[in-house]
Amino acid sequence: MTDRLALFTGGQFADSHAKTAHGILRYGEREIVCVVDDASAGSVASDVVPYARRAVPIVRDIAEAAALGANVLVIGVAPFGGALTEEWRAAVLEAIQAGLSVEAGLHTVLAEDEELAAAAAASGVELRDLRAAPAGLSVPPAERPDVTVVHTVGSDCAIGKMSVTLELDAAARARGLESAFVATGQTGIAITGWGIAVDHVISDFVAGAASRLVHEGASRAPLLFVEGQGALGHPAYSGVTLGLLHGSKPDVLVLCHRAGSVDIDDYPGVPIRPLPELISIYEAATSWVDHPAKVKAIAVNTRGLDDDAARAELERVSAETGLPAADPVRFGGDSLLDALGVT
Image 1 (cartoon, one colour):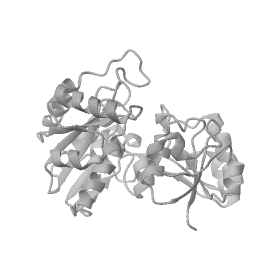
Image 2: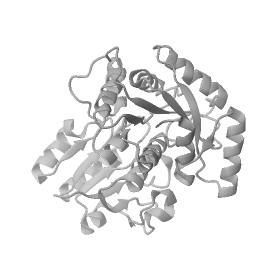
Image 3: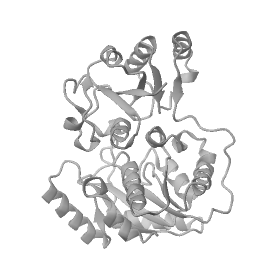
């Protein structure tokens, strides 16, 4: 049966935490019937989040989604901590009882939940856990395949590292380059159908998971764009960032930042370090495993700014860092790709 998706965002569709829904809308190839979001119901997705691109309806509840013909409910929010809330549990149960399979990238494993698993079995639907780690992960080997690895890193979480990586891959392929996007999180996996959600991997094996992805990517293309996760300065997620950085052994880094951000999201009062300092920190971290890489460009998320203000911010960031700065989602990825020097 062909998937017909309903993206559940629990009243947060307009918020950056609904990045899974936003990413699937912008980059996914599966059919999307609707967004389920009571706060934005009655609108269309592209009016609420313009870069989502698709003008699918936003409905109030699961019943409306089922009536429109949806057969898969996707949890479209990446919440702090990744847990299934009681409100979302009720929505998942309602969807299962309405005959919808459920796809989620939560740390709560749906298939291991006795109530949800029993309901799914009774309704004959699937529970798809995108964050479930594959078997057989271990530490990384010493050698990396002979490929070019471009890796996005960030000043914070939920600022568009996945989008930047996808835009760079698309720009490369538009030039006739053989490239592949390497998904390291649940949204990327939902879009591409392969990858490993490295933040659900045992901490000792995060670098090994990243290395496995590079080895698998090498069978797909000689140029790999590896999606970043978290930030080295993030109090909660820095460990995932470092494991991914060391396991993928990138050749080139792209630093991602959200215009106007001062503090780490969800940690008010924890400042984001100046961009030149972040560049030094990331470059130093790559050298710790004897595979030094340079930050070659800055990708700036200018959402919320008009075009003139966005261009002014890009000029400011470029002057601050001495590097090319662009918003590839807004203005395309070609200028960033030029700065990377990949062929």
